[in-house]
Length: 106
Image (cartoon, helix red, strand yellow):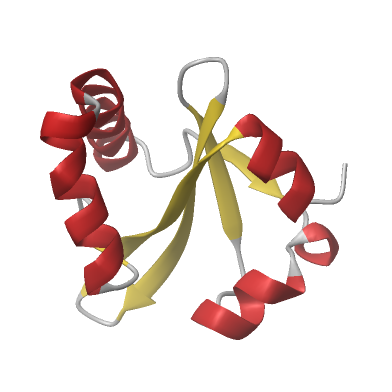
């Protein structure tokens, strides 16, 4: 079953939609990431449970985290959820590598 891509919240979806005019290249890269995730939901790099930032666990109630590398300085964060009927790839955020390092305390 192909996973369904959903955004964690409406603001994230709106931010993604606005990328089409603000940063078309990044928008296209994220769309490609969505296709890759649909074809293989495990295509990202899995984060060990004890390394998932508490901020993300508290905000989204996730128990797994995957990182998909976009261009050299951007990362897409997603989580997988089984919704009894379908598998969801929940898009949590995309960020510059600098913000990614700060989130993970590297």
